[in-house]
Image 1 (cartoon, rainbow, N blue to C red):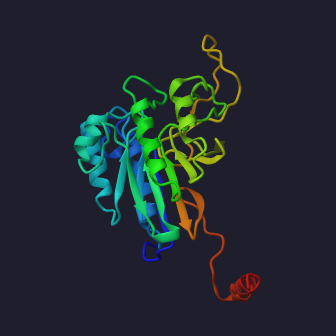
Image 2: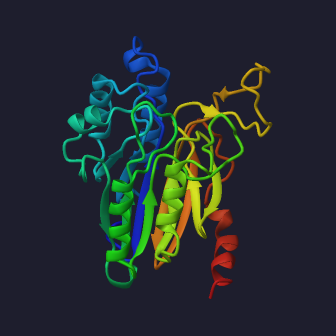
Length: 293
C-alpha cells in the first residue's frame, strides 16, 4: 500500500498485557491472543505501512516479556513503533526497543508519511507516569507537542496516545476532567486545525468521541475487554458488576487516502464466511461500481 503516494495504512495494536500469567510462557492467554492478532494482520492481502503498539505491551514491565514481543514482531516487513502505557516500564521498553526515539526522556516522536498535499504527520505521545493507572501529560511533554504542531500548521496530523483524554462513563477507568494532565492536553490541542484524529487505547473497548472538535477513537484491546457498564460506582459497595470479559481481541487499520482518514476495527477469531465474490455475483458488483460513475 505504501507504493501509492497518496495512501498510508497504519495498523494499531494495543493493550496486549503480555506477562499477566508469568509462568505460562508461550501458552499465556494474552500472548496467544497477541500472536493470533498479529498473524491475522500479517495474513491480509494488503499490508500496512507501519504498526503502532500503543501501550500496555506488558502487564508489569517485565524485560523478558518485551523480549518475547520483540521476537514476535520481528516477522513484520514494515516498521513497528512502540509507546508505553501505564502497565509498562519505560526503561525496560527502551532497552528492548533501542531504536524508539525519545525527547527529554519520554518515548514520544513524530513519524512522517506521504508526500506533498497528501502528507501526514503522526505524533506519538508518552502518557505514562510510574505509579499511576491514569494518564500523565506534563508541561515538558506539552511543550514538545505544542512545538511540533506549531512547526507544521498546514500538515495533516494524527496523534497517538495510550490514555484517551475523555470521560467515557466507565467510572473505574475514567479520568476526572479536572486532572492536570487532562486539562493540559485539551489546552494544547485546542485551535490546532491540522489535527485530523486522536487514536488511543487503555479502555479495552471501542469508543468514539470528540476532543476539542477533533475526532477520537479507541482501539479495543488484545487482552480481555473491559465490560460496558455505565452505572455510577460506589467503591464501598462490591455490587458484583462485570468488570472484565473474554470478548475477542482486536486490531485497527487507519487508512489515510487523498486527504481523508477512515478507521476500521477488526475482531480476530474463527468466523464463518457467508459469501465470496464468485461468478454469480459479477452482475451485482458491476452494478455497484457503475453507480459510482
